[in-house]
Length: 86
Picture 1 (cartoon, helix red, strand yellow):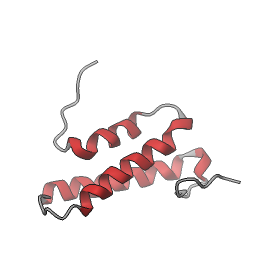
Picture 2: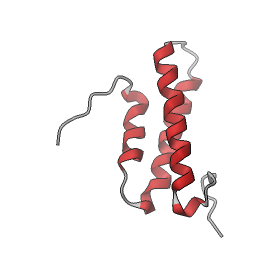
Picture 3: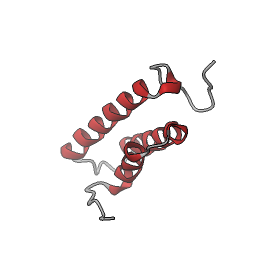
């Protein structure tokens, strides 16, 4: 398997793992992990984010939101960690 080059591996690795997940049972946790990595990067105070990375981060957030909407167990809603569908 070839390696995919990443410009922002600090959070893109987790995003790629979520996008590439094929088992619904593990998808929600991978989405949450990617969200945490993205929001941690956005919250860093070192101000090293350039405009290109900010745009990439916002696009990644949009991708994850779309994934929540199609996740069968979510009912189209993002579930906070630990909340089960009824």
